[in-house]
Length: 124
Image 1: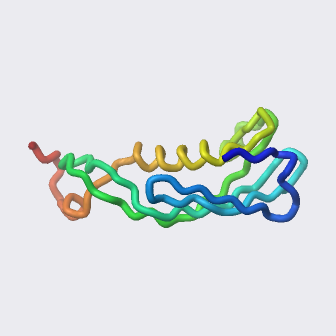
Image 2 (image 1 turned 180 degrees about the vertical axis):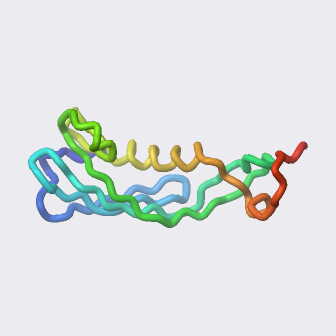
């Protein structure tokens, strides 16, 4: 799902995308000439592999995301929380996939392994 920067106004524009039992939805709202604020909620179950035992499990996702998006190059290194979309289009699918990949790249432990106090990995 792609939305043109030009079509995002000062009043909130809703969006929603669902993929593999995970919903990502919220609003886009212009805050300046080249900046849009995204407020979104991620809700659903993500299939993961436990980083300790290697078993499959589902993790319930239910959290909010707030990002700033821009259609110009950001030169200030203090604005690391701004995502650039230089082609003039906000790609909601890209943002959604980025959120999922961020979770997948973290350490994820199944409920059984979360409670273990062992310092070493379990051998299969």
